[in-house]
Image (cartoon, rainbow, N blue to C red; front, side):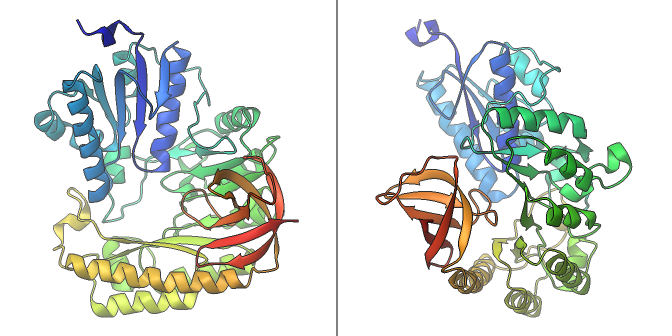
Length: 433
Protein backbone atom coordinates (compact mmCIF):
# COMPACT_ATOMS: atom_id res chain seq x y z
CA UNK A 1 0.00 0.00 0.00
CA UNK A 2 1.34 3.44 -0.88
CA UNK A 3 2.01 5.60 2.17
CA UNK A 4 0.45 8.55 0.31
CA UNK A 5 -3.08 7.17 0.82
CA UNK A 6 -2.58 7.04 4.60
CA UNK A 7 -2.41 10.84 4.66
CA UNK A 8 -5.54 12.90 5.16
CA UNK A 9 -7.14 13.65 1.80
CA UNK A 10 -6.32 17.08 0.44
CA UNK A 11 -8.35 18.31 -2.54
CA UNK A 12 -6.50 20.45 -5.08
CA UNK A 13 -8.76 22.52 -7.37
CA UNK A 14 -7.21 23.62 -10.69
CA UNK A 15 -8.94 26.43 -12.62
CA UNK A 16 -8.62 26.95 -16.37
CA UNK A 17 -10.41 29.52 -18.52
CA UNK A 18 -12.36 32.65 -17.74
CA UNK A 19 -13.49 34.59 -14.67
CA UNK A 20 -16.76 32.61 -14.63
CA UNK A 21 -14.69 29.46 -14.03
CA UNK A 22 -12.69 31.22 -11.30
CA UNK A 23 -16.00 32.00 -9.58
CA UNK A 24 -17.28 28.41 -9.97
CA UNK A 25 -14.05 27.00 -8.48
CA UNK A 26 -14.37 29.39 -5.53
CA UNK A 27 -17.96 28.23 -4.89
CA UNK A 28 -16.84 24.57 -5.11
CA UNK A 29 -14.04 25.24 -2.61
CA UNK A 30 -16.42 27.06 -0.25
CA UNK A 31 -18.78 24.07 -0.32
CA UNK A 32 -15.91 21.62 0.33
CA UNK A 33 -14.62 23.68 3.24
CA UNK A 34 -18.15 23.85 4.74
CA UNK A 35 -18.16 20.02 4.66
CA UNK A 36 -14.89 19.98 6.62
CA UNK A 37 -12.69 19.03 3.66
CA UNK A 38 -9.11 20.23 3.30
CA UNK A 39 -9.01 22.13 0.02
CA UNK A 40 -6.28 24.11 -1.80
CA UNK A 41 -6.11 26.00 -5.09
CA UNK A 42 -3.42 24.94 -7.55
CA UNK A 43 -1.14 23.53 -4.84
CA UNK A 44 -0.26 19.95 -3.87
CA UNK A 45 -3.13 17.59 -3.10
CA UNK A 46 -3.73 13.86 -3.50
CA UNK A 47 -7.24 14.41 -4.96
CA UNK A 48 -7.42 16.71 -7.98
CA UNK A 49 -10.42 18.52 -9.48
CA UNK A 50 -9.74 20.15 -12.88
CA UNK A 51 -12.24 22.88 -13.79
CA UNK A 52 -11.89 22.99 -17.58
CA UNK A 53 -12.58 25.50 -20.34
CA UNK A 54 -14.10 24.43 -23.68
CA UNK A 55 -14.52 27.80 -25.37
CA UNK A 56 -12.03 27.88 -28.26
CA UNK A 57 -9.30 25.58 -29.61
CA UNK A 58 -6.41 26.93 -27.50
CA UNK A 59 -8.45 26.67 -24.31
CA UNK A 60 -9.62 23.14 -25.14
CA UNK A 61 -6.03 22.09 -25.85
CA UNK A 62 -4.83 23.50 -22.51
CA UNK A 63 -7.65 21.66 -20.69
CA UNK A 64 -6.89 18.33 -22.39
CA UNK A 65 -3.15 18.69 -21.74
CA UNK A 66 -3.80 19.45 -18.06
CA UNK A 67 -5.98 16.33 -17.74
CA UNK A 68 -3.27 14.22 -19.42
CA UNK A 69 -0.60 15.67 -17.10
CA UNK A 70 -2.61 14.64 -14.05
CA UNK A 71 -3.37 11.20 -15.47
CA UNK A 72 0.40 10.71 -15.68
CA UNK A 73 0.74 11.88 -12.06
CA UNK A 74 -1.98 9.41 -11.08
CA UNK A 75 -0.13 6.61 -12.88
CA UNK A 76 3.11 7.61 -11.14
CA UNK A 77 1.34 7.47 -7.77
CA UNK A 78 1.70 11.21 -7.08
CA UNK A 79 -2.08 11.72 -6.92
CA UNK A 80 -4.82 9.25 -6.00
CA UNK A 81 -7.90 10.55 -7.82
CA UNK A 82 -8.64 12.96 -10.67
CA UNK A 83 -12.08 14.48 -11.31
CA UNK A 84 -12.88 16.71 -14.28
CA UNK A 85 -15.62 19.37 -14.35
CA UNK A 86 -16.41 22.60 -16.23
CA UNK A 87 -17.18 23.57 -19.81
CA UNK A 88 -15.02 21.05 -21.70
CA UNK A 89 -16.52 18.23 -19.64
CA UNK A 90 -20.05 19.56 -20.24
CA UNK A 91 -19.49 19.79 -23.97
CA UNK A 92 -17.47 16.65 -24.71
CA UNK A 93 -18.16 14.23 -21.85
CA UNK A 94 -18.76 11.10 -24.04
CA UNK A 95 -15.63 11.80 -26.13
CA UNK A 96 -13.50 12.42 -23.04
CA UNK A 97 -14.74 9.26 -21.31
CA UNK A 98 -13.73 7.31 -24.41
CA UNK A 99 -10.37 9.03 -25.01
CA UNK A 100 -9.22 9.46 -21.37
CA UNK A 101 -11.10 6.70 -19.51
CA UNK A 102 -8.91 6.58 -16.41
CA UNK A 103 -10.25 9.92 -15.07
CA UNK A 104 -12.25 8.93 -11.98
CA UNK A 105 -15.36 10.86 -13.03
CA UNK A 106 -16.48 13.64 -15.38
CA UNK A 107 -19.04 16.31 -14.38
CA UNK A 108 -20.81 19.04 -16.36
CA UNK A 109 -21.27 22.71 -15.43
CA UNK A 110 -24.56 22.10 -13.58
CA UNK A 111 -23.49 19.01 -11.65
CA UNK A 112 -21.94 20.62 -8.56
CA UNK A 113 -24.05 18.52 -6.08
CA UNK A 114 -22.96 15.28 -7.81
CA UNK A 115 -19.30 16.39 -7.87
CA UNK A 116 -19.43 17.22 -4.15
CA UNK A 117 -20.96 13.81 -3.44
CA UNK A 118 -18.11 12.11 -5.33
CA UNK A 119 -15.68 14.10 -3.14
CA UNK A 120 -17.47 12.94 0.02
CA UNK A 121 -19.14 16.31 0.68
CA UNK A 122 -22.76 17.48 0.88
CA UNK A 123 -24.20 20.28 -1.24
CA UNK A 124 -25.32 22.96 1.22
CA UNK A 125 -28.18 25.02 -0.26
CA UNK A 126 -28.03 27.49 2.63
CA UNK A 127 -24.56 28.71 1.61
CA UNK A 128 -24.92 32.10 -0.09
CA UNK A 129 -21.64 33.69 -1.00
CA UNK A 130 -19.53 31.30 1.09
CA UNK A 131 -16.59 31.22 -1.29
CA UNK A 132 -12.89 30.66 -0.93
CA UNK A 133 -11.66 33.51 -3.12
CA UNK A 134 -8.54 32.85 -5.19
CA UNK A 135 -8.03 36.41 -6.50
CA UNK A 136 -5.88 38.97 -4.62
CA UNK A 137 -7.79 39.91 -1.47
CA UNK A 138 -8.82 43.39 -2.67
CA UNK A 139 -11.05 42.29 -5.57
CA UNK A 140 -13.43 39.46 -6.33
CA UNK A 141 -15.70 38.40 -9.17
CA UNK A 142 -19.44 38.53 -8.57
CA UNK A 143 -21.33 36.33 -11.03
CA UNK A 144 -24.80 37.85 -11.37
CA UNK A 145 -26.22 35.38 -13.91
CA UNK A 146 -25.44 32.04 -15.54
CA UNK A 147 -25.92 30.99 -19.17
CA UNK A 148 -26.90 32.98 -22.24
CA UNK A 149 -29.95 33.38 -24.50
CA UNK A 150 -28.10 35.17 -27.31
CA UNK A 151 -27.89 33.34 -30.66
CA UNK A 152 -24.35 34.42 -31.72
CA UNK A 153 -23.26 32.11 -34.52
CA UNK A 154 -19.66 31.58 -33.37
CA UNK A 155 -20.28 30.95 -29.69
CA UNK A 156 -20.58 27.60 -27.91
CA UNK A 157 -21.33 29.03 -24.47
CA UNK A 158 -25.10 28.31 -24.51
CA UNK A 159 -24.17 24.65 -25.25
CA UNK A 160 -22.00 24.56 -22.14
CA UNK A 161 -23.76 26.93 -19.77
CA UNK A 162 -27.42 26.67 -20.77
CA UNK A 163 -30.06 29.40 -20.84
CA UNK A 164 -29.74 32.75 -19.06
CA UNK A 165 -30.58 32.56 -15.36
CA UNK A 166 -30.28 35.64 -13.12
CA UNK A 167 -29.37 35.44 -9.42
CA UNK A 168 -31.84 37.40 -7.21
CA UNK A 169 -30.70 40.85 -6.06
CA UNK A 170 -31.02 39.96 -2.35
CA UNK A 171 -28.66 36.96 -2.76
CA UNK A 172 -26.09 39.06 -4.60
CA UNK A 173 -26.22 41.72 -1.86
CA UNK A 174 -25.61 39.04 0.82
CA UNK A 175 -22.68 37.72 -1.23
CA UNK A 176 -21.24 41.24 -1.65
CA UNK A 177 -21.56 41.88 2.10
CA UNK A 178 -19.66 38.68 2.90
CA UNK A 179 -16.93 39.59 0.41
CA UNK A 180 -16.67 43.10 1.90
CA UNK A 181 -16.40 41.60 5.40
CA UNK A 182 -13.47 39.50 4.13
CA UNK A 183 -11.65 42.65 2.93
CA UNK A 184 -12.76 42.79 -0.71
CA UNK A 185 -12.94 46.40 -1.92
CA UNK A 186 -13.70 45.91 -5.62
CA UNK A 187 -16.46 43.83 -7.19
CA UNK A 188 -16.06 42.80 -10.82
CA UNK A 189 -19.58 41.98 -12.05
CA UNK A 190 -19.58 39.12 -14.56
CA UNK A 191 -22.13 37.19 -16.62
CA UNK A 192 -22.27 36.03 -20.22
CA UNK A 193 -24.38 39.16 -20.75
CA UNK A 194 -24.91 41.70 -17.96
CA UNK A 195 -27.57 43.58 -19.95
CA UNK A 196 -29.95 40.59 -19.82
CA UNK A 197 -29.86 40.65 -16.02
CA UNK A 198 -33.31 40.43 -14.43
CA UNK A 199 -35.37 39.68 -17.55
CA UNK A 200 -36.20 36.18 -16.29
CA UNK A 201 -36.81 37.14 -12.63
CA UNK A 202 -38.23 40.66 -12.81
CA UNK A 203 -39.57 40.73 -16.40
CA UNK A 204 -37.34 43.74 -17.16
CA UNK A 205 -33.65 44.57 -17.60
CA UNK A 206 -32.73 45.24 -14.00
CA UNK A 207 -28.98 45.86 -13.91
CA UNK A 208 -29.44 49.47 -12.74
CA UNK A 209 -31.53 48.37 -9.72
CA UNK A 210 -28.91 45.75 -8.83
CA UNK A 211 -26.19 48.43 -8.94
CA UNK A 212 -28.29 50.72 -6.70
CA UNK A 213 -28.43 47.88 -4.14
CA UNK A 214 -24.73 46.99 -4.38
CA UNK A 215 -23.43 50.56 -3.90
CA UNK A 216 -25.01 50.51 -0.42
CA UNK A 217 -22.70 47.67 0.70
CA UNK A 218 -20.21 49.11 3.18
CA UNK A 219 -16.55 48.47 2.44
CA UNK A 220 -17.01 48.10 -1.31
CA UNK A 221 -15.31 51.04 -3.05
CA UNK A 222 -15.37 50.05 -6.72
CA UNK A 223 -17.93 48.14 -8.80
CA UNK A 224 -16.88 47.24 -12.34
CA UNK A 225 -19.03 46.03 -15.25
CA UNK A 226 -17.83 43.20 -17.49
CA UNK A 227 -19.41 41.72 -20.61
CA UNK A 228 -22.31 43.82 -21.78
CA UNK A 229 -24.05 43.07 -25.07
CA UNK A 230 -24.53 45.97 -27.51
CA UNK A 231 -28.21 45.32 -28.36
CA UNK A 232 -30.85 46.19 -25.78
CA UNK A 233 -28.33 47.96 -23.53
CA UNK A 234 -30.27 49.41 -20.53
CA UNK A 235 -29.33 53.09 -20.69
CA UNK A 236 -30.46 53.72 -17.08
CA UNK A 237 -27.20 51.96 -16.10
CA UNK A 238 -25.31 55.03 -17.35
CA UNK A 239 -27.35 57.30 -15.02
CA UNK A 240 -26.28 55.16 -12.05
CA UNK A 241 -22.66 55.15 -13.28
CA UNK A 242 -22.67 58.93 -13.50
CA UNK A 243 -24.38 59.43 -10.13
CA UNK A 244 -22.65 56.80 -7.99
CA UNK A 245 -18.91 57.27 -7.37
CA UNK A 246 -18.54 53.56 -6.50
CA UNK A 247 -19.47 52.47 -10.03
CA UNK A 248 -16.26 52.60 -12.09
CA UNK A 249 -16.46 54.68 -15.25
CA UNK A 250 -15.69 51.53 -17.19
CA UNK A 251 -17.59 49.16 -19.44
CA UNK A 252 -16.48 45.93 -21.13
CA UNK A 253 -18.65 45.55 -24.23
CA UNK A 254 -17.46 42.84 -26.68
CA UNK A 255 -18.44 44.08 -30.17
CA UNK A 256 -16.75 41.28 -32.21
CA UNK A 257 -16.86 43.03 -35.64
CA UNK A 258 -18.28 46.05 -37.45
CA UNK A 259 -18.81 45.01 -41.10
CA UNK A 260 -22.61 44.76 -41.55
CA UNK A 261 -22.24 41.56 -43.58
CA UNK A 262 -20.17 39.87 -40.87
CA UNK A 263 -22.39 41.16 -38.04
CA UNK A 264 -25.41 39.69 -39.81
CA UNK A 265 -23.71 36.31 -40.30
CA UNK A 266 -22.57 36.41 -36.65
CA UNK A 267 -26.26 36.94 -35.67
CA UNK A 268 -25.36 39.92 -33.52
CA UNK A 269 -28.64 41.77 -34.12
CA UNK A 270 -26.96 45.10 -34.82
CA UNK A 271 -25.24 47.15 -37.56
CA UNK A 272 -22.22 49.44 -37.85
CA UNK A 273 -24.50 52.48 -37.72
CA UNK A 274 -26.36 51.32 -34.58
CA UNK A 275 -23.13 50.30 -32.79
CA UNK A 276 -21.39 53.60 -33.55
CA UNK A 277 -24.47 55.53 -32.36
CA UNK A 278 -24.57 53.53 -29.12
CA UNK A 279 -20.89 54.25 -28.38
CA UNK A 280 -21.45 57.96 -29.04
CA UNK A 281 -24.37 57.87 -26.58
CA UNK A 282 -22.09 56.24 -23.99
CA UNK A 283 -19.46 58.95 -24.44
CA UNK A 284 -22.08 61.73 -24.27
CA UNK A 285 -23.66 60.32 -21.09
CA UNK A 286 -20.39 59.53 -19.26
CA UNK A 287 -17.57 61.46 -21.01
CA UNK A 288 -14.87 60.03 -18.72
CA UNK A 289 -15.88 56.41 -19.39
CA UNK A 290 -13.26 53.89 -20.49
CA UNK A 291 -14.65 51.43 -23.02
CA UNK A 292 -13.05 47.99 -23.43
CA UNK A 293 -14.03 45.82 -26.37
CA UNK A 294 -12.98 42.55 -27.99
CA UNK A 295 -12.97 41.75 -31.70
CA UNK A 296 -12.80 38.59 -33.81
CA UNK A 297 -10.91 38.51 -37.12
CA UNK A 298 -10.93 35.72 -39.68
CA UNK A 299 -14.61 34.83 -39.30
CA UNK A 300 -15.90 32.70 -42.26
CA UNK A 301 -16.38 34.88 -45.33
CA UNK A 302 -14.41 37.83 -43.93
CA UNK A 303 -12.99 39.49 -47.06
CA UNK A 304 -10.14 41.96 -47.23
CA UNK A 305 -12.83 44.66 -47.61
CA UNK A 306 -14.61 43.54 -44.42
CA UNK A 307 -11.31 43.58 -42.58
CA UNK A 308 -10.40 47.06 -43.89
CA UNK A 309 -13.82 48.31 -42.70
CA UNK A 310 -13.04 46.94 -39.22
CA UNK A 311 -9.52 48.38 -39.23
CA UNK A 312 -10.67 51.87 -40.26
CA UNK A 313 -13.37 51.77 -37.59
CA UNK A 314 -10.88 50.79 -34.84
CA UNK A 315 -8.69 53.73 -35.91
CA UNK A 316 -11.68 56.09 -35.81
CA UNK A 317 -13.24 54.93 -32.53
CA UNK A 318 -10.03 55.07 -30.47
CA UNK A 319 -11.07 52.56 -27.81
CA UNK A 320 -9.23 52.96 -24.53
CA UNK A 321 -8.91 49.16 -24.19
CA UNK A 322 -9.15 46.50 -26.88
CA UNK A 323 -8.35 42.83 -27.39
CA UNK A 324 -8.40 41.01 -30.74
CA UNK A 325 -8.79 37.26 -31.29
CA UNK A 326 -8.68 34.96 -34.29
CA UNK A 327 -11.86 33.08 -35.16
CA UNK A 328 -12.09 29.51 -33.84
CA UNK A 329 -14.33 27.08 -35.79
CA UNK A 330 -16.47 25.40 -33.11
CA UNK A 331 -18.62 22.32 -33.76
CA UNK A 332 -22.35 22.53 -32.99
CA UNK A 333 -22.34 26.31 -33.41
CA UNK A 334 -24.31 27.98 -36.20
CA UNK A 335 -21.10 29.21 -37.90
CA UNK A 336 -19.73 25.65 -38.05
CA UNK A 337 -21.97 25.16 -41.12
CA UNK A 338 -19.94 27.86 -42.90
CA UNK A 339 -16.59 27.20 -44.53
CA UNK A 340 -13.69 28.27 -42.29
CA UNK A 341 -12.13 29.91 -45.34
CA UNK A 342 -9.72 32.52 -43.97
CA UNK A 343 -6.21 30.97 -43.79
CA UNK A 344 -4.68 30.81 -40.31
CA UNK A 345 -1.74 33.05 -41.27
CA UNK A 346 -4.17 35.70 -42.58
CA UNK A 347 -6.17 35.54 -39.33
CA UNK A 348 -2.98 36.02 -37.31
CA UNK A 349 -1.70 38.87 -39.50
CA UNK A 350 -5.03 40.68 -39.15
CA UNK A 351 -5.15 40.23 -35.37
CA UNK A 352 -1.57 41.46 -35.03
CA UNK A 353 -2.25 44.51 -37.17
CA UNK A 354 -5.31 45.46 -35.12
CA UNK A 355 -3.28 45.11 -31.91
CA UNK A 356 -0.48 47.26 -33.41
CA UNK A 357 -3.03 50.00 -34.14
CA UNK A 358 -4.43 49.66 -30.61
CA UNK A 359 -0.94 49.84 -29.12
CA UNK A 360 -0.39 53.20 -30.84
CA UNK A 361 -3.81 54.52 -29.73
CA UNK A 362 -3.14 53.38 -26.16
CA UNK A 363 0.31 55.04 -26.22
CA UNK A 364 -1.21 58.35 -27.37
CA UNK A 365 -4.00 58.23 -24.77
CA UNK A 366 -1.44 57.38 -22.07
CA UNK A 367 0.83 60.30 -23.00
CA UNK A 368 -2.07 62.64 -22.23
CA UNK A 369 -2.17 61.24 -18.68
CA UNK A 370 1.36 62.40 -17.76
CA UNK A 371 1.07 64.89 -14.89
CA UNK A 372 -2.45 63.77 -14.00
CA UNK A 373 -3.54 62.54 -10.56
CA UNK A 374 -5.32 59.18 -10.13
CA UNK A 375 -6.68 57.03 -7.31
CA UNK A 376 -5.19 53.55 -7.67
CA UNK A 377 -5.58 50.26 -5.85
CA UNK A 378 -2.40 48.25 -5.21
CA UNK A 379 -2.73 44.66 -6.47
CA UNK A 380 0.75 43.30 -5.77
CA UNK A 381 4.49 43.92 -5.57
CA UNK A 382 6.49 42.72 -8.54
CA UNK A 383 10.26 43.13 -8.70
CA UNK A 384 11.10 46.73 -7.88
CA UNK A 385 7.57 48.08 -8.31
CA UNK A 386 4.25 48.11 -6.57
CA UNK A 387 1.64 47.38 -9.25
CA UNK A 388 -1.68 49.17 -9.11
CA UNK A 389 -4.73 49.95 -11.24
CA UNK A 390 -6.96 52.95 -11.81
CA UNK A 391 -10.76 52.67 -11.97
CA UNK A 392 -10.29 52.53 -15.77
CA UNK A 393 -8.47 49.20 -15.62
CA UNK A 394 -9.71 45.71 -14.92
CA UNK A 395 -7.46 43.07 -13.31
CA UNK A 396 -5.38 40.81 -15.59
CA UNK A 397 -6.52 42.32 -18.91
CA UNK A 398 -5.87 46.08 -18.76
CA UNK A 399 -3.17 48.67 -18.15
CA UNK A 400 -1.28 48.85 -14.88
CA UNK A 401 0.35 51.62 -12.84
CA UNK A 402 3.94 50.98 -11.69
CA UNK A 403 5.23 52.74 -8.57
CA UNK A 404 8.90 52.60 -7.55
CA UNK A 405 9.04 50.41 -4.40
CA UNK A 406 12.39 51.85 -3.28
CA UNK A 407 10.79 55.29 -2.76
CA UNK A 408 7.50 54.36 -1.11
CA UNK A 409 6.08 51.49 0.92
CA UNK A 410 2.52 50.56 -0.09
CA UNK A 411 0.21 47.88 1.23
CA UNK A 412 -1.42 45.39 -1.14
CA UNK A 413 -5.15 45.97 -1.32
CA UNK A 414 -4.95 49.61 -0.22
CA UNK A 415 -5.95 52.65 -2.25
CA UNK A 416 -3.49 55.48 -2.78
CA UNK A 417 -3.30 58.68 -4.85
CA UNK A 418 -0.58 58.95 -7.48
CA UNK A 419 0.72 61.36 -10.09
CA UNK A 420 1.70 59.92 -13.49
CA UNK A 421 5.33 60.70 -14.38
CA UNK A 422 5.87 58.53 -17.49
CA UNK A 423 3.73 56.49 -19.88
CA UNK A 424 4.36 53.48 -22.14
CA UNK A 425 2.02 51.72 -24.62
CA UNK A 426 0.01 49.95 -21.95
CA UNK A 427 1.44 50.96 -18.57
CA UNK A 428 1.81 54.14 -16.56
CA UNK A 429 4.66 55.02 -14.18
CA UNK A 430 3.67 57.11 -11.19
CA UNK A 431 4.74 58.45 -7.81
CA UNK A 432 2.64 58.72 -4.67
CA UNK A 433 1.24 62.20 -4.05
